[in-house]
Amino acid sequence: MTTTRPVAPPASEARARVRAVTQRYARRGGRATVRGRAYPAYLVALFTVFYLVPVVHARSTSPAPFPVSSVSSVNFSAGAAPLVCALAVAVCWGGQLAGRFWGPLVVQPFLLHVLMSTDLSPAHYLGTIARRRLAYAGTVTLLAVCSAAYLATDLFDRAGTALPGLAVIAGVSAVAAAAWLWGQVRAVRDNFLLAGAVGASALVVAGISGTAPDGRYGHWLAALVPALLAAAIGPPAFRALPSIDLARLARESARASQARAYAWTGTLHHALDLYRPEPRGFPSALIRTDGSLRGYLTQGVVRALRTPGRAAAAVTLLPVGGASLTHGAAGSGGGPEWWWWAAGSFGVYLGSGWVGETWRGLRDELTMAPLFGERWGGLPARALAWPVVAVTAGTFLGGALVALLRWPLPAGREGSTALLVAGSVVLVLGARFLREMKLHLPLELLLPVITPFGDLSGLRVVAWQFDGIVVVLTGVALMNAVPSATGSAVLAVCLAAGCAGAGLRRTGWAHRGLLARLRRG
Image (cartoon, rainbow, N blue to C red; front, side):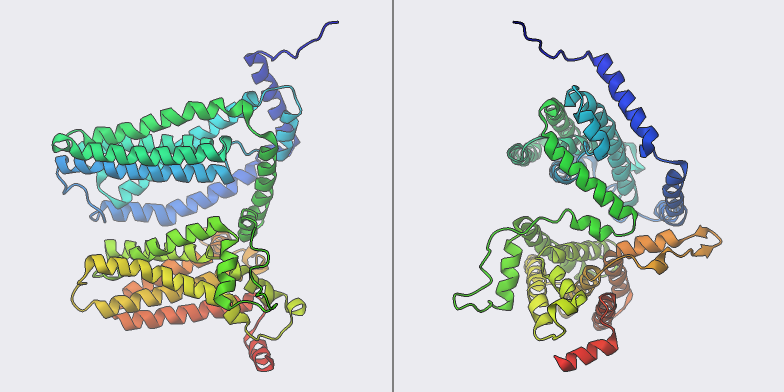
C-alpha cells in the first residue's frame, strides 16, 4: 500500500496560479473602475490647489515654526539620537497596533476564500500582497513625514541637516511598514515582547549617544537605529506568513469589507463602531446588594473598566493632552504655543471618547424614547456625570503638572491660563457630544454644491464625518484670536452650547419638544 503526499508547486507555477485567480476575480467586478478612481483624484486635486499649495507657499515665505538651523551641528548631533529613538518607538508601537485592527494582509473576503480553498501555501498568495502594500505604506509614510518636516521645521534648508534627516525619515518609514506587518501576523505575546524590547533598546541607545564625545556621530547613530530595527523585524514577519491564522484573517477581512462599505456610503461612525471592543466582565457590579443601582460616577467607572484597553488609552491621553493644552495656553499666544494648544485639545477630544460607553448609552436613550420612556429624570446626570468628571480631572491633572514645572507662570497669565484651559475643556465636551449624537448621513449633504471650481459637496461630507475635530480646531483658533481670556472662555461656552443644541436636534429632540419633555419629567 502506497500513500501519496501532496507536492508543493514550484514558485513560478504558484505565482502564475495566483495571478490567474486575481485576474479572474478582477473581471468579476473587483477591479476599480475609471469613475471610481476619478473621484478620489478630484478630491486630491481640490485639496492640493486650495490647501496644500497655499500652505507650502506660506512656509517658503516665512520662518519655520520650529527652527533647527539655529542649533549648532554638535548640539543637533547630540540631541538627534534620543528624539529619533522616541520617534521610532512611537512608530513601531503605532504600526503594531494598526496591524492588529487593519493589517496589510486584509483583502476582499471572496478573493481570500478562493485562495484559501486551493492547495497553495499562504506564503504564495499573501507574500506578494504584503510586499506590495508594505512598499506603498513605506512610501506614503516617507512622503508624509518629509512634508511635515518641511512645513514645521527648516530641516531641509541646509545640507548639514537635510542628509541625516532624510536618512532618519527613511529608516522610520521602513520601521512603520515592518511593524505594520508584524502586528498582524505575530501573536499578542510576540507583539508585547517586541514592544518591550524596542522600548528598552531605545533607552540604551539614547543613553549611549549622550555619552559620546561632543555628540559627534549622534545623527548617524540616529539614522542607523531605525534601519537596524526594520531589518530585525521585517524578515521574521515574512517568515510567519505560512503559519498565519487564516480563520482570524477571514474574520478581519469580512469586518474590513463591511467597514469599507459603511465608509463609502457616508456613515464613517458606523464603520468605526465595528472596531469598538466588546465590553466584558463585571456583570453585576452596577447593582448593590439591596438591588438598587449604584451612583452615577460608580456606574461610569464600571462601564469604563469593562473596556480596559480604551480606558487605558483615555488615562494616557487625557493628562498628556491636558499638559500640552496648558503649556500652549500659558504662552504668549500665536506661533508654537498655538500648536501645543491645538494638539492638546485634540488629545483631550480623543480621550473624552474613550473614557467609557456612556456616550453611546445617552444617544440610544435619546433616539429610542418609545423604548426607554420619555421621562428625563436623571438621564443627563446619569450619562454625563462620568465623562465630564473624568475629562475634567484628567485634563487638569496634566495641567497641574505643567504648572508646577513652569511655576511661576508668565506675569499675569495665571488666571487667563485657567480660563483658557477651562474653556477648552467645555469646548471639547461640546464637540464630543455633537459627534456622539451623530446618526445617519443627512440626505441634503449629497446635493451638489456648484461653484466655479466644480462640485464641492464632497467637502461637506468630509466635514460632516469629522465635525467634532473641525469644531475643536476651529474653536481653538477663534479662542486664540480673541485678545482677552474672558472673551475666549465665553466664546468656548457659546460654541459648546451650539454643539449641544445641534446634537439634540440630531437625535430628534427639538427645542420645543425638549422643553415639553422637561416639564413632564
